[in-house]
Amino acid sequence: MTADPALAVLVLESGRTAEVLLSGELDVDADQVLRCVLSRILADPLVQRVELDVALVDFCDSGGLTALIRARTRAERFGVRLCLVRVGPQLRRILGMTGLWDLFDCTGVEDCL
Image (cartoon, rainbow, N blue to C red; front, side, top):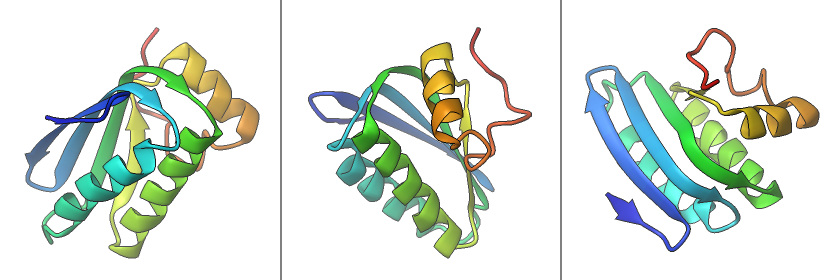
């Protein structure tokens, strides 16, 4: 588990899919954390999909949205699909208002209620 004062990360890799569990705050500091985590994941040529599990994210600001966009862009460069899973109501609202819901391939995934 990697820890930032505001964000904790746990990575579970299983073949073609890597699941990244995020807990805490997605803000400007999350960019560096996600960059490091994705660098390790994307070094594995078997990985074709990264699922960011955001069920335990309790805060997201514009810096956090930027970190998510950058993470998606990094994954795309490797031909890897990045999507958000277990999106809670607050983050769902933010993604919907900003037009980012579809960008992160959130449709068809298990959502928190």
